[in-house]
Image 1 (tube, rainbow, N blue to C red):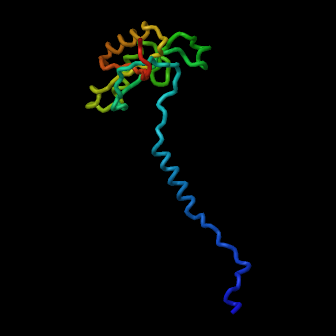
Image 2 (cartoon, rainbow, N blue to C red):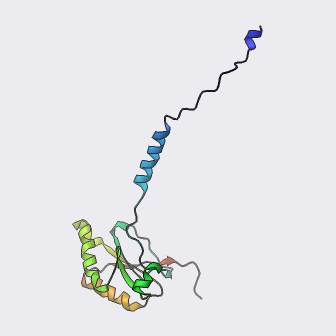
Image 3 (cartoon, helix red, strand yellow):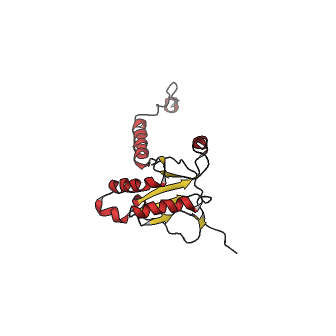
Length: 159
């Protein structure tokens, strides 16, 4: 009768199997590799966009090429000063370089999609309109007539 209720002494619980752990890690690694979008370019200029109320959201962001205009970021101010500059992709550029930029951006796109390309101007709110007008004139010369301005949503009302 006593043998029926004997305790099992000296036996440890079985170890947890870690055989599937590498599979889980590789699945997570592949997920992040596929889901992550690499940044196209680093910001060389500071752009605090103005606020607006009548905004529309861009549906096809792949068809938009951005031109940044504003003062250089802190690490470039010693070399370039504080005057507003034009950033095209990863470089500072003059407004006269916009035509070449437009042509390069058009060549990157499929020929049937080129008429739908839009050029977005991301301009710092303290930038004078002179340099913006120069860029717009160059865009007009390059026949890039579809232009938009980036802005943030204004929540407060004007009185």
